[in-house]
Amino acid sequence: MNDQTQTSIEIGRYLLHRQIARGGMATIHIARLVGDEGFTRIVAAKRLHPEFAEDGDFVSMFLDEARIASKVHHRNVVPVLDVVTTGQEVVLVQEYVHGAPLHTLLRTAHEAKTRVPINIAVSIGCQVLAGLQAAHETTDELGAPLAVVHRDVSPQNVMIATDGTARLLDFGIAKATMAAHITREGMFKGKLAYSAPEQIRGYATQQSDLYSLSVVIWELLVGHRLHNNAQSEAELIGEVMHGRLARITEVLAPERERLGSNRWNQLEVLDAIITKGLAVDQTKRWRTAAEMEAALASAVAPASTTGVSGWIKNLGRAFLADRDRMLALEEASYRAIAKPPRRPSQGPHTEVGTVAGGPPAMMSRRRVRLLVGGAVGGFMLVLAFIIWMTREPALDLAATTPVPVATPPAPLAVPPTLLRAVPPVLPAPLGGVSTAAGTGLGESRAAPVRPMANIARTQRATIRPVVRVVPREPVREPPPVPAVEPAKPDCNPPYYFDGAKKIFKPACL
Image 1 (spheres, rainbow, N blue to C red):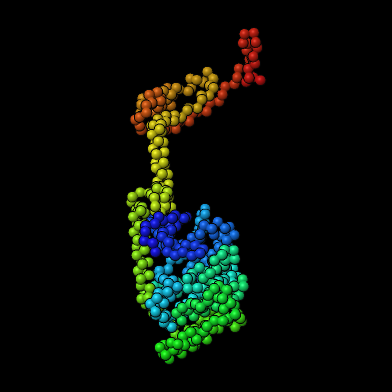
Image 2 (cartoon, rainbow, N blue to C red; image 1 turned 135 degrees about the vertical axis):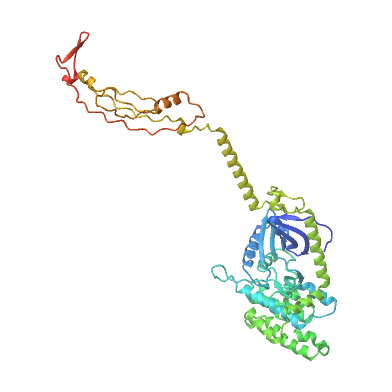
């Protein structure tokens, strides 16, 4: 691992930190998913090499297989979380598993001249078989089987987590990788040792995955590669196609006494199970992963996940310590350059863009809503204040409205001969009553007086913005006027002259 500080690469919403592995098709990076409000999550990102990312057919096949792999959900399968394609970059995002790859543990055990305990090997094999069974049975959302085949079961694609769980990597993308082997020289080397005969011929089945896993378990029990003596690819292919494979008991026969009778008996039972899984004829192999898992578990009791966890922490101590140190360095570097998230009390976060060398500073939806709501509320308050300031002064309608005065009925036409019989009605002083003068009726008759009429006229003449309210007295109804029979018109003559023009009286027509 390179301890030198590296610049993080921003691809979509992910930051790709330092490289932790490299293969013929891609590089593996520790990556970080950057979300809102300072949320981050460590993930693993597989970044395709430029020559593959520029191949449209390969990328289409790669993405199609990745979509299928994302539908596999099982505790022994590392899930595909996302696929990012931006410009010339194609990145497959997977869950980060804190542990060690199986090929690293096998190399460490070989260098330390120790073997993997049988129950540990069986536990790893059973867990991977459980993941394969779940993948082989995967269906789409409508229940149609997807016929998923891994095609690349190997120690490089099996992660042993620190909690003792064996997890299978890169589900579904092996098909794209294998298609590239046809035209890309050297890409198939290294994986060929774990390929079934029919897979070398160009068509893989779910039983091909069982063949590959049988090779892995063989190497776990023996301690070295199955095709360790092959001098060339042609010789290796000949061994695979013709089934000239050494059995476990044949290779370990010189160590029989040192291994002990109990362990040797376990190896003999497991040898028969592995030999069936390595059959050239598919009809002679195990039919399903679940069937092979049951056979392994019945032959030797597999170690618990706690036992596997203790084994990896002991054997992979140096690797795990190195990985822990690398994660700590990346976290410290990220915190040093990343802008801390603002708290709600500090106001809305208005910076949008990319922090130099760090994650993009993103404004949360909640803060955007608060900012927009505050702006709208402030605008409404300003608008209401402007309307209030520009309004005209209101007048007191009760004070400025003139007091309605009852209009007396128009006097009837009374003949001159009867005018003496109707006495005039004189207005009384303010607040008094009027009397009928000279009525000859022997008593005064009270008539309602409208003392507010003159006041209302004065108010109309002298109205001001602020008017004093004067209480009004109740208006009394006028007394009934005696009915007077109208006088007959003078129709003798029935006309009169207006200058030289003769005009007839309307009442005489």
